Length: 300
Image (cartoon, one colour):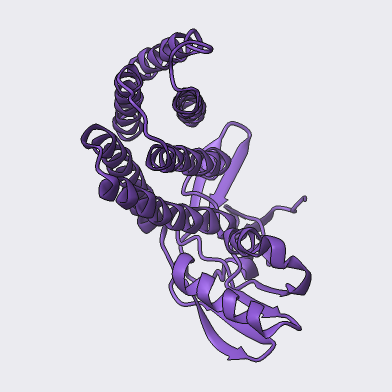
């Protein structure tokens, strides 16, 4: 879009801001906006980053086979008001259960036989988003350490704890993705990278959960696999430390270490090595390598 420049007081140059943007973020007279000069461009952002409510309506009657995935995607899209209806009352009850159990920041405020209304009950600032993301990293570190401890001690209770912890991680990451869809990240150019990072973190947590479930259902004697799994866990911890205390040289070294570990594991296919654990290890390392790429892009 184009804007004409106006002059006020003979020396102050003024342009108007797009009305849809003003309405979307609820900008009021007297509020401060951040203005950043980037070459031939001027970037204007609102630090509060709070969008006006978005409403979504859907009939879920035909979506019963994929109801959890459907609701998760609705949630991640960042809607602050959701109206769900169905000719099947049992589905409405399932919707209420899912939102109360898995989706942070939204609550069923009205339920009838064939419909329910879900509304946002809490707003999260950019600073709170960063805290949630850091807590997610720490939860994944705790999860993977529980899986490792459960394997070493042959303790099924610890493995089950790790599986339950994966649900918490998924809830926090669903909230992160919902917030990113509702507003941009604090540095708007990094929004896509941070969203992809959240997807990768969720997939990593899921791989650890799958390892725990696999160990629970199989009587395995794994020694070399444990040593390689410990290496993978250590690489993830190093990525977490590098993400919050960024140094380019450390990123380069960690990228090489991740790649070398993957190549070592690739050579173990079709050997006396549990193939399911092997695949999970490689998958986690692939995702860490992707996250290294995201962090590099954010630093440029």
